[in-house]
Length: 241
Image (cartoon, rainbow, N blue to C red):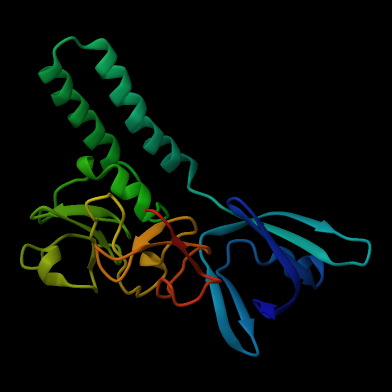
């Protein structure tokens, strides 16, 4: 097997990191930093990894390179997500009036959410702050994978949108601009056919399949675009969910 045309000797994973053991020189390994990582077998693509950065390279006594890649959110994005919870907790402690507290909490959370770059944020994290996602309106700029709500439903953008158009709201524009996120009553996302890296399933995320009443599966790999239950290497059935 090969990683970006470099021979793979072995591989392993550790939480948010993945390690490929490569038979190559240091320059070729270093050149993988920031690239889309494609695993191929006999010229056929097996897996693709997006958003990974080269974390470190170690060399064994036989010359094999251990290349560790980490999936990282931008520091500002991490901080913004954390700030939502921090702001909510702080205001709830300081204010005595429940109605006033709710109004300010909602306002602060929405302002913080609007400042996040959501391109690399998982669907799970988006759903966790769905109450504070901005409502879609015409005339606004949206980045790639930005979440919006429209007519009570949650959507994310398939691409960056310079300016939203009144005649193309999410329920009419379709997959080329927006894709829906359906959440079951238990808070778990319902699987939908993936169309690219932007809506593929992250490692550790759960999905109902084939519908909201179907069983729950957890993805065993990052950017999983396969159908839940199709292969035990990619999905694990969650029992007693």
